[in-house]
Length: 96
Image (cartoon, rainbow, N blue to C red; front, side, top):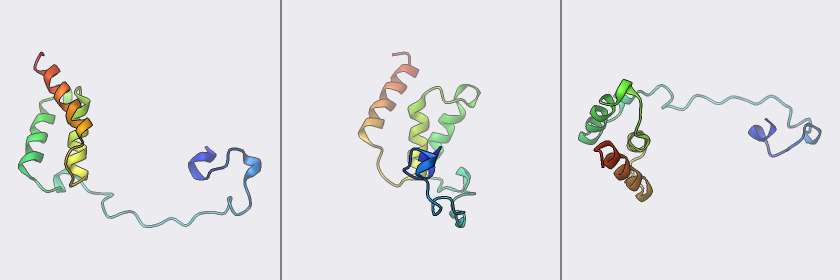
């Protein structure tokens, strides 16, 4: 657990400064953001339809959920490695 908060491996290495309470910061502005609040582009709408079509709402095609997350949280093109995984997942979903 120590590694979660500082780079010390043993309790004996902690100093009194390490054990002082921290001052919490305000929640980031996006903390209560909902997917519905994101810009509703054609790509986002298509991904939403595709997501709803998944059995029981479960992502059985992991890379597709990764694509949804990537496009919802970044404004950047999908990385090549993810594109490859998406192609494999779609081929498998299409029976090939």
